[in-house]
Image (tube, rainbow over all chains, first blue to last red; front, top):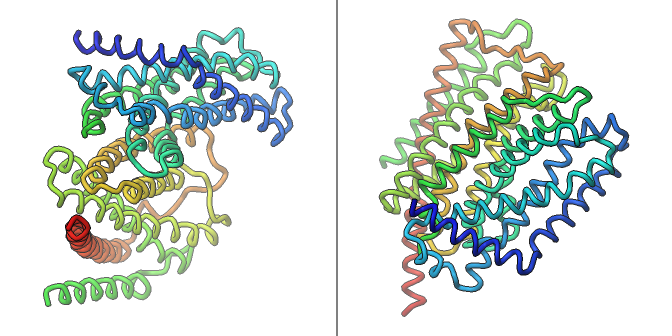
Length: 224
Length: 224
């Protein structure tokens, strides 16, 4: 209960910081848009081709965007020397991670939702009918990205070359998420849409494994 | 003296293993002499995985006990494991080209081995980018734990994904029904490579301990 309470307060702080500037969401959105547009030059974006390449393209774009978007979440605290204050504010260091990863998941999900209609129009892939199922896949995948990503951001913020290091550490860890989300999305965007619960279940398992790992080992990443 | 003896023993074992693989083992009926690479390839994969298991245990022990030696063991085993997995990734294509007709295929086992290689490259890269030895030990230990937890997930996701899209290349391989002489040669290779692994990890461990000592002395010198 105490954990949820302090997580709530810290989450409020994260959301307020972002809502004041809105720079994270805007830049991420533009970045994804760029990737999606640039990808259209690499293959013939007809409807059938887009069905084949679209899901992979989308998730690679989300993955790269996330690896940029996750940078500031601990870096900002370090630059402003607020990490110790943050640590003292909560009895459980897991609350800090929980708040940050919830905020990151919300931001990533929001940019994805803003991106989907644009993708659908540009690549001529209808998404309206499968939207609820798609939302489930997006959530499970983004949660996986942000759980591991928040932990890795806490690691990379303490190293040299951190901007480059975060994607290097994060992307190999996320191979299973990329595969599962792409497969689940591809099944939804196919001519005959199907919700692949096995892949969604796999994503949920990934999320749980790393959330547990973060709960067990996260506090060591915040030590002085 | 002891070290020289150990080195002599390891070299001797490797010599016997090489002789057995090249001259004692019977020639495989369909693949011919190229199959002999299997005696190096397969045990290397198992040995690499054992080394990564050692890294994982050392990482856990470091996080909970905070003794430097577990950090040294972790990095030593990871480096040796990476060397062995590189042997696997190099000997694989050498065998595959004449047998399958291609150097590489994105088959489940090949792909997951490659991702494993990438994960541990990232682990070692992280270590080079953190100055403070305690911080480096702690951060890399937590990342190492995350990486190891990721391995079964990577393997599972890639297997599901690839079994659903069967590859045109045959995945026969000499795994099943090995001739008794072949089994014996394989066992000799196993023993030789495991002893090589232990020897290398020990050497690397001592080197890391010396490095840490030098580091302490240098710091003291700078402070004085």
